Image 1 (tube, rainbow, N blue to C red):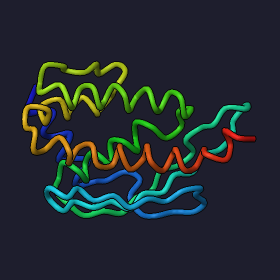
Image 2 (cartoon, rainbow, N blue to C red; image 1 turned 90 degrees about the vertical axis):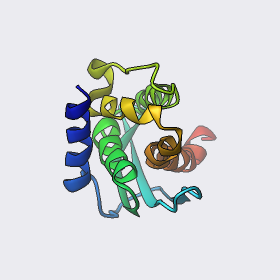
Image 3 (cartoon, rainbow, N blue to C red; image 1 turned 180 degrees about the vertical axis):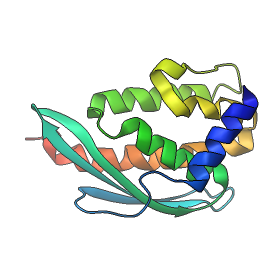
Image 4 (cartoon, rainbow, N blue to C red; image 1 turned 60 degrees about the vertical axis):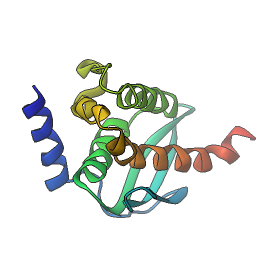
Length: 151
């Protein structure tokens, strides 16, 4: 199973989904992993669908290791199209798994390709790499929805 997960990560690294900064967007952030120097510029576009804030697009550019770049691609696949609430729940599942030091395998049914990063949790130095795009997205979502919460 670990070989399959490594293959999923390498596939997302070689064939990134969502890569390339696009418009429209409501918020853009720049995050850096100071430990290794990985970087990401990320934009989020949120639309109201039936009165519910929905992640309409995530676009990004970045440089870094295969883990951080593949994680951005998996994040794009996992979150675009979800309501902001569902997307934050997905982030919570990913974060719980990746910070479990290998104790939490994740649920493929609810996490899709993101479960491929379960093995990364065993390497504390790599956890920040995998979390970099997800934390950037969370920051961008907060900025994008700030005004909507006060309407």
